[in-house]
Structures are given as structure tokens and as C-alpha cells.
Image (cartoon, rainbow, N blue to C red; front, side, top):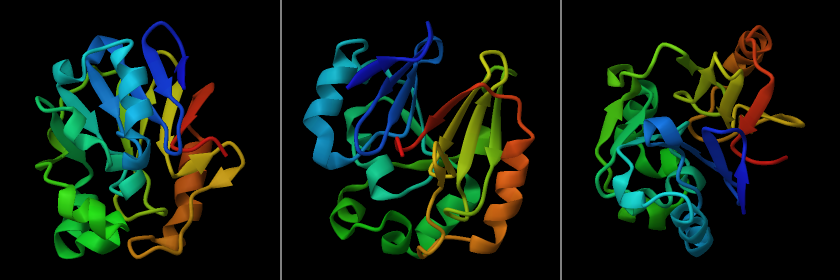
Length: 187
């Protein structure tokens, strides 16, 4: 289901949330492949997916990367630690062998992405070694992936999790100035 967060940001609420930042022609996470028909219907109601130039993955689990191929002209960005883990253990990074076989996106280190200064990319290890959050300092929005939810934080018992780093990550997030939380899932 499509939700308008503000005049610039749209959320497609599904198993794994997807966000579209209109002025940047940017998507954060691409949702679960099992919900592709709904994701495609909702997204095309506001933008032609073939015009999206940038996709940021908060991490590489299957439910966040499943619809990557909806964006044929996009460049795909993730944290370098997430990319390294993926290169070493694709199934451990993605958690779904079917999606691993389909996932052909060329991943680029998020450090190479040039965004307006109001957007901060924050490395938030815990759920995965290369999890990131994106903070819009102007609109005070935190896109938290599976690092932080409304009722807690993401799992830390998965192959690429770093459980010992989650507490420090949550302390870091607690110091950020945001008013709107845009998590990877609505729980």
C-alpha cells in the first residue's frame, strides 16, 4: 500500500518497506519479490521505475533486494562491508537461494554515492555487518532498514549479523535528531 510520508517521500508498505525519494529519483530497498505485483502497481502510480537512477540497499537480505530488476537504469549501492560479505557468502548475505540466483545487480560502495549534504549515510552494524541507515537532516527522517523498528531492533542471529555491535549502533541512533522513523518493516 502506498503512503505519502511528506511532499518528497513515499512509502510502499509491504512485507519489507520500500521508499521513494522523489527529488533524488532514488529508491531505498526494493521489497520482497513475492510482493512484486503490488510493489509494481503502487510504485508505477507515482513514477516510472525505468526512470529511477539510484537504489540504496540498507542491507542485502532477500526481502530488501527482491525487486531490484524493476529498475533497469539504476545504479545499486550498499555498504562496502555488506558487499564484501555478499561476495564471500552470497546465500548467507541474501538468505534465499532462489533470489541469490536471480540477483544480478552490480553493487557499488555507498561511499561513492554523492547525495546532497542533508542526507547522511550511517554504518549501523548489528542486523548485518554492513547495515546502514540514511538520515535526512532537513526533514528529520531516519530510514532505518532492519536496524530499528517501532518496537525494537532487527534480528542479530543471522549469518552476517554482528550481535555485539548492535548495542553501540542503537546508542548511536539514540543520539540522532529525527522525528520520523521509516523502518524496513512495520513492527
